[in-house]
Length: 201
Image (tube, rainbow, N blue to C red; front, side):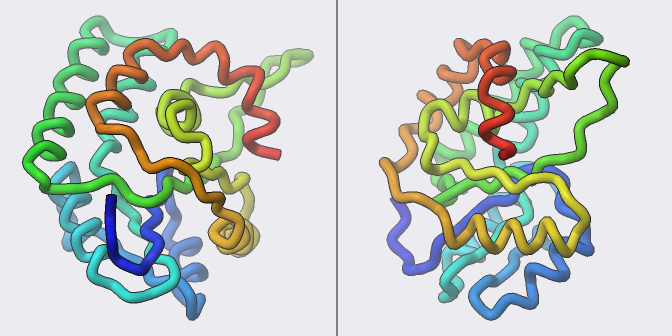
Protein backbone atom coordinates (compact mmCIF):
# COMPACT_ATOMS: atom_id res chain seq x y z
CA UNK A 1 0.00 0.00 0.00
CA UNK A 2 1.26 3.46 -0.89
CA UNK A 3 2.15 5.85 1.95
CA UNK A 4 2.36 9.28 0.31
CA UNK A 5 -0.31 11.90 1.14
CA UNK A 6 -1.71 12.34 -2.37
CA UNK A 7 -4.59 10.33 -3.80
CA UNK A 8 -3.26 8.81 -7.02
CA UNK A 9 -5.89 8.07 -9.66
CA UNK A 10 -5.29 6.38 -13.01
CA UNK A 11 -7.52 7.49 -15.89
CA UNK A 12 -8.72 4.41 -17.74
CA UNK A 13 -10.00 4.93 -21.25
CA UNK A 14 -9.25 7.47 -23.94
CA UNK A 15 -8.55 10.86 -22.35
CA UNK A 16 -8.84 13.63 -24.98
CA UNK A 17 -6.32 16.45 -24.73
CA UNK A 18 -9.20 18.92 -24.34
CA UNK A 19 -10.41 17.05 -21.25
CA UNK A 20 -6.93 16.85 -19.72
CA UNK A 21 -6.37 20.54 -20.39
CA UNK A 22 -9.51 21.49 -18.47
CA UNK A 23 -8.77 19.15 -15.56
CA UNK A 24 -5.16 20.31 -15.25
CA UNK A 25 -6.36 23.83 -14.40
CA UNK A 26 -7.88 22.65 -11.12
CA UNK A 27 -5.83 23.79 -8.12
CA UNK A 28 -6.42 20.49 -6.30
CA UNK A 29 -5.35 18.25 -9.17
CA UNK A 30 -1.92 17.50 -10.61
CA UNK A 31 -1.79 15.77 -13.98
CA UNK A 32 0.94 13.28 -14.89
CA UNK A 33 1.35 12.10 -18.47
CA UNK A 34 3.78 9.49 -19.76
CA UNK A 35 7.06 11.03 -20.84
CA UNK A 36 7.71 11.43 -24.56
CA UNK A 37 5.84 9.20 -26.97
CA UNK A 38 6.65 6.01 -25.11
CA UNK A 39 3.87 3.55 -24.39
CA UNK A 40 3.48 0.33 -22.45
CA UNK A 41 4.17 -0.89 -18.95
CA UNK A 42 7.49 0.90 -18.42
CA UNK A 43 6.12 4.27 -19.51
CA UNK A 44 3.05 3.92 -17.29
CA UNK A 45 5.16 2.65 -14.40
CA UNK A 46 7.40 5.70 -14.72
CA UNK A 47 4.38 8.00 -14.66
CA UNK A 48 3.10 6.30 -11.49
CA UNK A 49 6.50 6.66 -9.82
CA UNK A 50 6.52 10.38 -10.61
CA UNK A 51 2.95 10.67 -9.32
CA UNK A 52 3.97 9.11 -6.00
CA UNK A 53 6.36 11.99 -5.37
CA UNK A 54 3.84 14.79 -5.93
CA UNK A 55 2.20 16.56 -3.00
CA UNK A 56 -1.28 17.42 -4.19
CA UNK A 57 -4.76 16.40 -3.02
CA UNK A 58 -5.25 14.41 -6.24
CA UNK A 59 -2.77 13.22 -8.83
CA UNK A 60 -4.28 12.02 -12.11
CA UNK A 61 -2.13 9.68 -14.17
CA UNK A 62 -2.97 9.42 -17.87
CA UNK A 63 -1.27 6.04 -18.25
CA UNK A 64 -1.96 2.55 -16.93
CA UNK A 65 0.47 -0.38 -16.61
CA UNK A 66 -2.52 -2.73 -16.99
CA UNK A 67 -3.71 -1.15 -20.26
CA UNK A 68 -2.47 -4.02 -22.46
CA UNK A 69 -3.97 -6.58 -20.08
CA UNK A 70 -7.30 -4.74 -20.21
CA UNK A 71 -7.25 -4.53 -24.01
CA UNK A 72 -6.52 -8.22 -24.45
CA UNK A 73 -9.13 -9.24 -21.90
CA UNK A 74 -11.72 -7.28 -23.87
CA UNK A 75 -10.48 -8.81 -27.14
CA UNK A 76 -11.17 -12.31 -25.78
CA UNK A 77 -14.87 -11.50 -25.58
CA UNK A 78 -15.34 -9.76 -28.91
CA UNK A 79 -17.46 -11.61 -31.45
CA UNK A 80 -14.87 -10.97 -34.15
CA UNK A 81 -11.95 -12.04 -31.95
CA UNK A 82 -8.92 -13.55 -33.60
CA UNK A 83 -7.83 -17.01 -32.57
CA UNK A 84 -5.18 -16.81 -29.91
CA UNK A 85 -6.70 -13.87 -28.05
CA UNK A 86 -6.57 -15.88 -24.82
CA UNK A 87 -2.88 -16.59 -25.29
CA UNK A 88 -2.22 -12.91 -25.93
CA UNK A 89 -4.05 -12.03 -22.71
CA UNK A 90 -1.89 -14.49 -20.77
CA UNK A 91 1.25 -13.01 -22.32
CA UNK A 92 0.30 -9.45 -21.35
CA UNK A 93 -0.75 -10.61 -17.90
CA UNK A 94 2.61 -12.33 -17.40
CA UNK A 95 4.43 -9.15 -18.44
CA UNK A 96 2.41 -7.04 -16.00
CA UNK A 97 2.90 -9.52 -13.18
CA UNK A 98 6.66 -9.65 -13.76
CA UNK A 99 6.89 -5.85 -13.62
CA UNK A 100 4.69 -5.69 -10.51
CA UNK A 101 6.66 -8.41 -8.71
CA UNK A 102 9.87 -6.54 -9.54
CA UNK A 103 8.37 -3.46 -7.80
CA UNK A 104 8.44 -1.43 -11.02
CA UNK A 105 4.91 -0.24 -10.31
CA UNK A 106 2.20 -0.32 -7.68
CA UNK A 107 -1.51 -0.02 -8.33
CA UNK A 108 -2.96 3.47 -7.84
CA UNK A 109 -5.39 4.37 -5.09
CA UNK A 110 -8.24 4.41 -7.62
CA UNK A 111 -9.12 3.87 -11.26
CA UNK A 112 -11.39 6.41 -12.91
CA UNK A 113 -13.03 5.06 -16.06
CA UNK A 114 -13.81 7.60 -18.76
CA UNK A 115 -16.92 6.28 -20.46
CA UNK A 116 -17.30 6.74 -24.20
CA UNK A 117 -20.45 7.33 -26.18
CA UNK A 118 -22.15 4.00 -26.92
CA UNK A 119 -22.30 2.95 -30.55
CA UNK A 120 -25.79 3.13 -32.09
CA UNK A 121 -27.78 -0.06 -31.63
CA UNK A 122 -29.91 -1.77 -34.22
CA UNK A 123 -33.46 -0.36 -34.51
CA UNK A 124 -35.57 -1.49 -31.56
CA UNK A 125 -32.61 -2.94 -29.70
CA UNK A 126 -30.91 -1.65 -26.57
CA UNK A 127 -27.19 -0.97 -26.91
CA UNK A 128 -25.19 -3.71 -25.24
CA UNK A 129 -22.21 -2.66 -23.12
CA UNK A 130 -18.85 -3.87 -24.36
CA UNK A 131 -16.88 -6.15 -22.07
CA UNK A 132 -14.67 -3.89 -19.99
CA UNK A 133 -11.79 -5.02 -17.80
CA UNK A 134 -12.11 -2.03 -15.47
CA UNK A 135 -15.89 -2.19 -15.01
CA UNK A 136 -15.85 -5.97 -14.96
CA UNK A 137 -13.24 -7.99 -13.06
CA UNK A 138 -11.31 -5.03 -11.65
CA UNK A 139 -14.42 -3.40 -10.22
CA UNK A 140 -15.70 -6.77 -9.01
CA UNK A 141 -12.67 -7.33 -6.76
CA UNK A 142 -12.76 -3.80 -5.25
CA UNK A 143 -15.97 -1.88 -6.07
CA UNK A 144 -14.92 1.19 -4.05
CA UNK A 145 -11.68 1.62 -6.00
CA UNK A 146 -13.17 1.94 -9.50
CA UNK A 147 -15.32 4.96 -10.38
CA UNK A 148 -16.94 5.99 -13.67
CA UNK A 149 -17.29 9.35 -15.38
CA UNK A 150 -20.16 9.44 -17.87
CA UNK A 151 -19.53 10.25 -21.52
CA UNK A 152 -19.95 13.95 -22.42
CA UNK A 153 -18.22 16.77 -24.23
CA UNK A 154 -14.81 17.65 -22.69
CA UNK A 155 -15.83 20.54 -20.40
CA UNK A 156 -18.84 18.65 -19.06
CA UNK A 157 -16.90 15.42 -18.65
CA UNK A 158 -14.14 17.34 -16.85
CA UNK A 159 -16.73 18.66 -14.40
CA UNK A 160 -17.96 15.11 -13.90
CA UNK A 161 -14.40 13.92 -13.36
CA UNK A 162 -13.71 16.53 -10.69
CA UNK A 163 -17.00 15.66 -8.98
CA UNK A 164 -16.06 11.97 -9.07
CA UNK A 165 -12.73 12.73 -7.39
CA UNK A 166 -14.55 14.40 -4.53
CA UNK A 167 -16.90 11.43 -4.21
CA UNK A 168 -14.35 8.61 -4.06
CA UNK A 169 -15.22 6.14 -1.35
CA UNK A 170 -12.84 4.47 1.05
CA UNK A 171 -12.50 0.74 0.95
CA UNK A 172 -10.08 -2.15 1.25
CA UNK A 173 -6.81 -1.92 -0.64
CA UNK A 174 -6.25 -3.93 -3.79
CA UNK A 175 -5.52 -7.63 -3.48
CA UNK A 176 -2.24 -8.86 -4.98
CA UNK A 177 -2.14 -8.42 -8.76
CA UNK A 178 -2.01 -12.16 -9.39
CA UNK A 179 -5.39 -12.46 -7.64
CA UNK A 180 -6.82 -9.71 -9.87
CA UNK A 181 -5.55 -11.50 -12.99
CA UNK A 182 -7.04 -14.78 -11.77
CA UNK A 183 -10.38 -13.03 -11.14
CA UNK A 184 -10.27 -11.73 -14.72
CA UNK A 185 -9.77 -15.26 -16.03
CA UNK A 186 -12.90 -16.41 -14.21
CA UNK A 187 -15.07 -13.33 -14.80
CA UNK A 188 -18.02 -13.66 -17.20
CA UNK A 189 -18.78 -10.28 -18.82
CA UNK A 190 -22.45 -11.10 -19.39
CA UNK A 191 -23.05 -9.74 -15.88
CA UNK A 192 -22.10 -6.28 -17.14
CA UNK A 193 -25.40 -5.91 -18.98
CA UNK A 194 -27.30 -5.70 -15.69
CA UNK A 195 -24.84 -3.39 -13.95
CA UNK A 196 -24.05 -0.96 -16.78
CA UNK A 197 -27.05 1.40 -16.27
CA UNK A 198 -26.18 1.82 -12.60
CA UNK A 199 -22.51 2.35 -13.36
CA UNK A 200 -23.15 5.09 -15.89
CA UNK A 201 -26.10 6.71 -14.17
